[in-house]
Figure 1 (cartoon, helix red, strand yellow):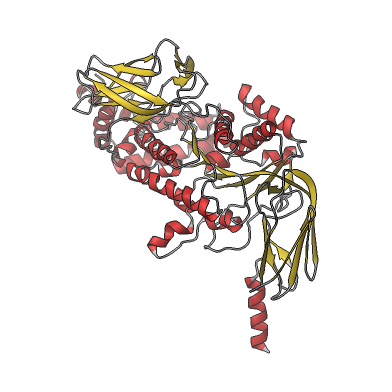
Figure 2: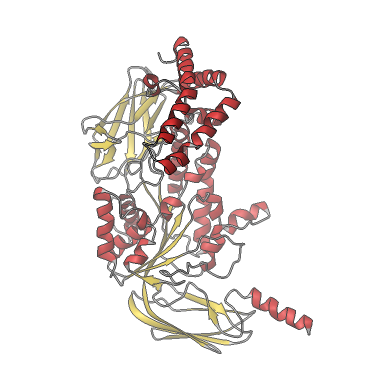
Amino acid sequence: MRNLKKLALTALIGCPFGASAEVSVSKIFSSDMMLQRDKAVKVWGKADEGEKVTVEINGQSVSTVAKDGAWKVALKPMQAGGPHNMSVKGSNSIEFSNILVGDIWLCGGQSNMDYDISRYNNWKGEIGQQYRDIIAESKSNTDLRMILMDKSSADAGTYDVPVVKDAVMQGKWQACSEKVILKMSAVGFVFAQKLQKHINVPVGLIDANKGGSNIKTWMPSSYYKKFGRTPRNMYFSMIASYKDFPIKGFIWYQGESNALDVKSSLEYENLFKAMIEGWRHDFQDPDMPFLFVQLAAYGRNPYQHGITYPVLRDSQKAALELENTAMAVAIDAGDRTNIHPPQKIPVSERLLAGAKKFAYGEDLVYSGPILRDVKLKGAQAELNFDHVGSGLMVKAMTVEGRQLTSDKLEGFEVAGADQKFYIADASVSKDKVVVSSTKVTKIVAVRYAYKGFPHANLYNKNGYPASPFRTDNFEIVFNAKDSMIFKRQFYLTKKYSKIFLNMDQKRALSKIQDSVINRELNKKITDMWKQRGPILRKNGFKSVEYKNFIESYDGLLNPLKEKITEQALAAGIFK
């Protein structure tokens, strides 16, 4: 008897949908859901061994018999439309209502895809207003449907689907409402909203993202076969658990977590290609459109991001070698210090242009200029581009408060055999760009926008920015110690604390500061500064307690600042 009870309990735990006495269906199916048009939709779930299960929808009735406790049927392709009802019948009956048939897109990636509209709809100025307008326009749109995946990992072969179950999402597909929209990926929802408006058929969005996630957490089983083991990851839980559920295509925004050093940025190329091909394989559609965002401009640490971000962008761009891929260049939609910039709407619109081309066969310009080749001609270099569209142009724009004008093409650098790069003079000549520099008599390499946060203004006349590039294969060196030095806080007197220091100056100043402030003294400064917040919150900015603290802190630090500055001046660091 004890063994029988143990077997029964094991069977119950092993069934992710609950007790096997009743027919159950995967959580990807629910009322208010979207089914993919023009494809055979598979429906699956659990049931007792040998139990007959029948699925009925839109005049179709398909039956099967459960085997090994599971069942699956395939519905014939349906045209866009609805609403429909669906029933799943066995020993019990499950009813779903208000089902639409249309196009389903899966949005995946890390935080820049994960950040929902609630992060941006209260943004000041025009940007916030644009999001509020989209919410107002969409909150009653019954032709938009969304489902949100819970952020979880799993082993390969996980059967159930981790759908968010809270007061808004309720563990199922949802039709549009303001509360639902605010929980959706900003990039993903704006893409879906604008797509639905364009094609005028129902559109569904599967939101499956995780902030801070490395691309390896999204790799399918096919990638891990060569290693002999398959670790738990987010792909198996958040995406592969419904790989039999047909969709129209993928949109993807990820890469920041891989741009930590040059090695990982270079490795991204092969990982990304393998991921795309693996996802397509698992969804049984080798030609499924895959649209992705190239990393936006960012440079909180100009040393690190100035080296690793351009390399990562190159690795992303290499995925265009695969068929039915499109890249939304976002180099002009970033922020130097905010890794999650609010300018997501143009990013969504550029993804939409790729969808129009590769998912819907429209004849349009969908990309900005991408370097095709370079012709080196001594002191000049001539650059030719694909995706010129209506022609190349120099765009007038403001970048971080700096005005770039339409009569000066910026962002180009050239190098000679010594591999030292200099800012280049550049101009548009018909559909080409010609670059030169008085400091380089024989150009061997050209780079464009090859920084974390560049000032660059080459576009095509269709409004799309050129993708960053380099024509060389020089070794790119990244020094983690230099990265730490670059973002280090230096203690200098007020006059010199605002001077911009290059890497050589910071290295020299770092040595001086370390000679003046030892570890014990540095810890004392750090610990003392930690007291500032509590004192300020408890007593206020104008309190005697706070003023006494600042006087004491300055009394410790000011003599050190003067000593470091004096030694730096003597060493000629500021010259």
